[in-house]
Amino acid sequence: MTTVSQVYGSRKDDHVRLAVEQHHQRGAGVEVNQFDDVRFVHDALAGIAESAVSLTTEVAGTDWAAPLYINAMTGGSTRTGEVNRGLAIAARQTGVPIASGSMSAFLADPDLAPTYRVLRDENPDGFVVANVNANATVDMAKRAVDLIAADALQIHINTIQEIVMPEGDRDFSHWPSQIGKLAEALDVPVIVKEVGFGMTRSAVRRLADLGVTIADVSGRGGTNFATIENARRPHQDFAYLRDWGQSAPACLIDDQAIAGQRGVTLLASGGVRQPLDVVRALALGARAVGVSGYFLSVLEGEGVDALVSTIADWIVQIRQLMVVLGAPTVPDLVKTDVLVSGQVAEFARLRGID
Ligand code: FNR
Image (spheres, rainbow, N blue to C red):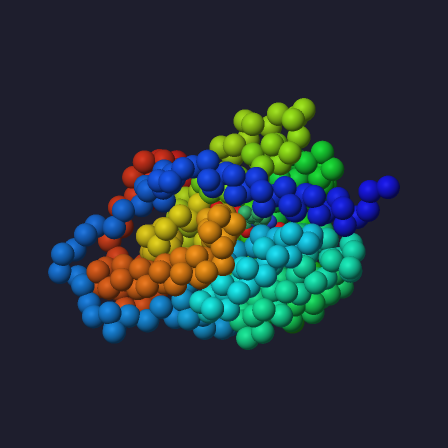
């Protein structure tokens, strides 16, 4: 008989393996994605002193030392517990916040708790985020938060991934009311996130109506869960979903007005490949930027020390880019001169955004 933990375990191991393959297939160079449609207009005299730049950003009522975090990935098997250990060590050594992967496996089988608890054990003083899906009850979400003494809770919404999975959910009608209940009942801040297909203004408006104040747009252009789930099943072909959704830059442009009106903090992730993408997303209104697939591929390919130095280098380079852009703080980046071209500009035009 196959146990709950075997089913979750092999799925979680597959996700890590296939996500890393996806990132390695892209080769040594940086794959083109819609972040490239966002260009800063260079001002040769805008530069300021490095000492004048502060990377601090406020998210979920807390000051983060840098506008960068390790976004949700894994847990639920022996192997992914070790991946979480590496990610948690990197978070501790660089001071960046970290989100757990979906904790559904722990909620179904408490024996899997150590594969998530390692996120807190290795990083006792860090900002750690729990993660559940939008089917979770208040009790389940509280158990997930308690297990890792989480500072916030992410609720992931992933309709496309679910439909590509034969065993996935087929009824999403209760998600909004469930999200509303969780946002109301939890003692920690709630962040609602996509998983790589993007969140446009209709979803952000809906979340604001439900009392959610933080949304992570998690757009397309990086890890692609339609492709990953499709690859796990040779007899099913959802390859045509590979281009579904909107990129993080497109979402940020789409969401800016409603987020401002309704007081929703936007976080950005999905397809972030380099420090410049972080700064681009911040200039488009994100409060902080999350990275999953790229950091995972560094950890899996080169080990934890390489991930630590990658994140540390990114933080240095984010600061340097702010120096040349003349932006002393993260909110000042929104005032920089940005040109949007290509598919993102076309999307904005079709959406009626100037
Ligand atoms: C993810 N992601 C994810 N998100 C989530 O909310 N819960 C989860 O359990 C997972 N699991 C997961 C596993 C693996 C191996 C990866 C790479 C990613 C999605 C992730 O948080 C993010 O939204 C997307 O991966 C897009 O960002 P990147 O990978 O393009 O930086």
